[in-house]
Figure (cartoon, rainbow, N blue to C red):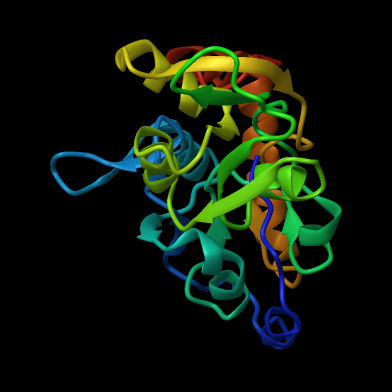
Length: 240
């Protein structure tokens, strides 16, 4: 789904940081700002597809877990520096990220990206297109003939379209479709774009034991149909 621009500083931070088997609590890092994947509910708690998924994975892996929220643009550096032990934040597997961290097997297939605009006839190929900073959508627009305008949060990209600062926003279908369905002033425009290689948990490269535990838990959910049921409930992607 999203693609971070990684720095050499993040690479350096990865040295010497490891998950200890004796840890009593595994900390799960998420953004908390990308409904329905992850968001903060009215009680101030992490909610959404990945909250339900992460809790179930921890149960199956026999791990005690707690949730930590972190801004998207620093979510990988703060993993490798030890602020939490795993990322579960709608993160697509990419070669660039895989150079810095490891990934579990994907828990959803790739989610197609859509354009959201205020009217028909938006020039998605050559207009002004908004995207969240550090996402695979931003990288795609930057390599196209369109003009990219980047914002720190998903909400700001939508507001840019409402304010006329951008002709459209490009983001995951599961995020934009819900907005189009509830906001009469906005609509899906243009053609879907296939991006990303599936969404997975991010793990420090030194934490092979933790990765194996989550891999086994994800596979067990695929095998018994629980994962597909959860995907359908939250409508985040196609099923396996």
